[in-house]
Length: 92
Image (cartoon, rainbow, N blue to C red; front, side, top):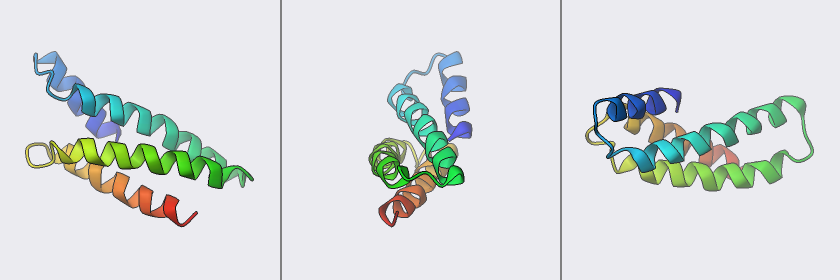
């Protein structure tokens, strides 16, 4: 996700705004997954609640990144990571 966000920023710097929606989704995903990691590490009783939110955000991020996956390796990698996280959240 971090690599994808940096890639989007680099595209913006060169004047390419085609990845705006991707950057927005990745930014949200990173925030939610960071919180999910903290709750998991703490053994929070609210982990399953947060996993439901993270699942939705990861699904959204995966869908957006898939739009660019054929042209940008970082978007493809992010989409795959979101798919993996979503699968883990489904089982939480």
